[in-house]
Length: 183
Ligand SMILES: Cc1cc2nc3c(=O)[nH]c(=O)nc-3n(C[C@H](O)[C@H](O)[C@H](O)COP(=O)(O)O)c2cc1C
Image 1 (cartoon, rainbow, N blue to C red):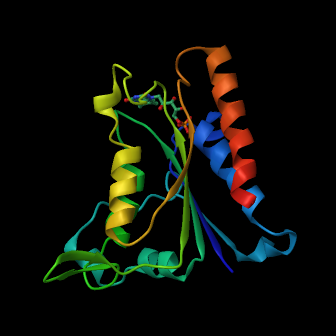
Image 2 (cartoon, protein in one colour):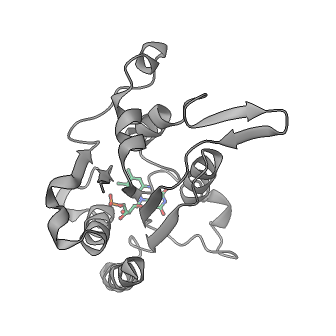
Image 3 (cartoon, protein in one colour):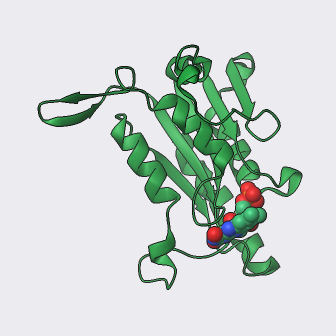
């Protein structure tokens, strides 16, 4: 069993999504899984923007397909995902490998994989929130993973930019929520 752990925050040790994704991996890994965790820091080692040539030797796709569980740290920047993470998504959405078109429309080809996403957002985007229409992080990630045949799970820390007390409370609640993932 392999866990692929991906981070994409530019905030280093102060990153909420890195804290949360790390906690999720800790919850999901049995004690003896150490050597089967693959860690990709997309800020320290960025994937270039997509080009046609990139489809020829797409090791990121093979790594994704080989993983049983994928844990992703996904901060909201400018209402959507970091470009570093988008470059990785561009490697795993591949016609003929992770989806195909049928007479009835597109069909996802990836099954039997667990994807858990740690969201970190400065504001609030729940239904009815003034900024709800600007939420293009969770909605995008859910849509793109659904497209390739996966129902992702989310753990979210919201309101992180509101103030230090709100940040502590939101992160604490999100870390607490990781307990249910192991169940
Ligand atoms: C460049 C940048 C852009 C941001 N844009 C948004 C935004 O559009 N909406 C929002 O709610 N928070 C925004 N934030 C706040 C982050 O979502 C928040 O700080 C979160 O903790 C980021 O996750 P991280 O700590 O893992 O990097 C932004 C932060 C940065 C650094």
